[in-house]
Length: 299
Figure 1 (tube, rainbow, N blue to C red):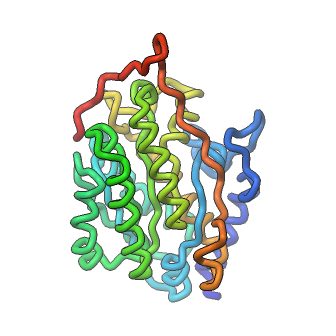
Figure 2 (cartoon, rainbow, N blue to C red; figure 1 turned 30 degrees about the vertical axis):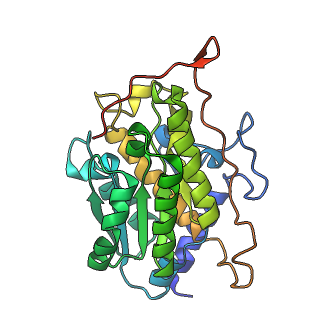
């Protein structure tokens, strides 16, 4: 085993000391559940609120071969960096630094292909050409926000996302999904909550890691005001929000290196290690009816 992979696994073991048990983690962390102390204080979230896990074969392969690890960041405005003070404050730029900090002596190249306002079907259509250009070991796909706001049909959304994930896996490319951001107004929207849950279900069935940005931001907002992580429009992330997003994605990648690759005989039947998801906040109701929040315009 090459030194970089061993070093990455050592870092992951340290991270897991503070994480919940993979097979029996509670849906909602009990009082006093430990958080990952390697995260910035403003970004600390219990593992059960932060990610679900799956093995990352492509990243392991790059580390074993001691070559640069290529990461394609694809998605909408959160990937493009709307709300960031500069290109270096976007989550893909910060992710590159986080991964290089966690993987000593490993070169990491994160390529940003975010497109503001894009829905999942649009990302799926340009995925093949973008992958051919970048040749990534890992695709981090931030997805679902604009689909929820545009009221894209849930089954169609799930099918498009699942088909694209399977295509990437079939080409030996790892995938990490990142679900929508949390805001207090969108937490009242049951369609938005359904999209968040759908992404988790696709991640589980496709056996890919999921960064639970919605739950992580909701947890962090409980310790501070919502707008601590949001730009002035109260929708896109600000510099702090992007820094936390980068740290959370980097931890999910690192911990994913700890998991053994599933054997071919068990790949179709075994249940992957995962942290059970907590359901998004229940929609606000008045006299038994959902109160719809004002929906922001997709950007």
